[in-house]
Length: 480
Image (cartoon, rainbow, N blue to C red; front, top):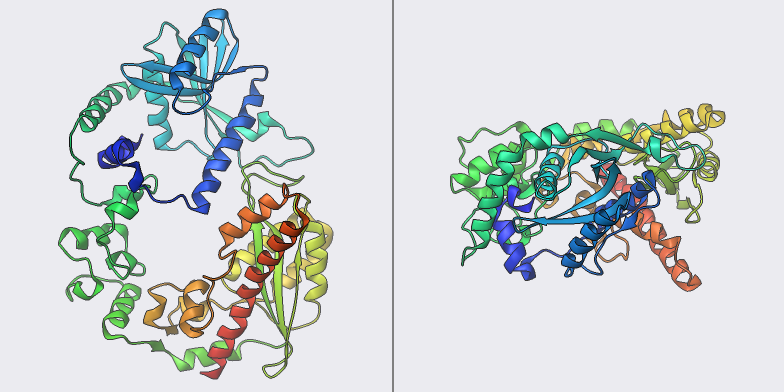
């Protein structure tokens, strides 16, 4: 599968793993989700035997155990390992169907994607080299239309899609790719393959840091709203630095303004439009930011897979431009359904008149709408609250205000240090939403009261900075 994306990545992974990028929090979360979903899917066929090896370096033991279990008449095998033609493949779930077998590849995705078909096709190739016959091969993926009510219903949570026909059709290409991959691995040197779109398609390669080390921080790959195809068109012509983009190269207005501001170290400050935006805002002001958790497995009643569930909000309040700043908020106890308590707290904290400012307010608006649908008794109050939302991101998204320090981005983490240089997220223990989600999830299993308090403090500091950042950004716009 790695070799399909890039033969160089395949070679580096085999012989130069020390060059791999460090695993970040979001990647760890993806792997954790995959492991959790895979284990849960075994419940579709309970009572099976797990053929996993003691560690990844002893898969021959797993291959031997799988053969033994098949010979002994085992009905269901988890992590069934097969080796054929020097290729190892592991089938997530293998289920006996008379004198034949059904195989299942479990994915935490909500649909069948093309890489999955290659994954199954390779497994089909290897398993077909044994003296067992496959009756069918399924991809078991998450059904994102499932709404939990009470105990998890695994039959509803998973969709089973037969892909054996596609796997069979891919067999000639699979055999060809196996030969190509073996030839790559037999080489004595790292393949000379330059960077390309395949570095992040279909997955971000974990050797990107090594292969992209010649690309500067401010490069053609950071130009705002410039498509991947055009970026590599520039790169393939020898252009890497923003300063070297030919004047004749076609750019949309957003990309062009980014390039011009970078080259000439020039800012965009459209005072009339900023004035109109600021005057459209009505005090008292409530600066709102949600933090959410999302899981493949719906954790509470009336939730769906991967639904973003708010568990925390920060709210800074200013009665007038000259008034003191007040702060309040909500942070649920880990492991509990936070929604009802959060709703009641939010309605109470935002009662009265005045606009509610959020940065990328569509996110908060969507969460509020979902809460209103799930708790209809609060729908009137929640939708009234939603109607007061205004988006502080708008002046930066529309380039009323832009500086080269924003490096083409209008995210709050780019805008804040550009407008308020002494404030940034880097020094926080929790510094982004993915990390916040990760530590909040881990809180549920934390037994040390002191560590629980420290983590909750870190979550508060992060969420509070998001809304304080909005206060300071608005003050900067008001001063202009």
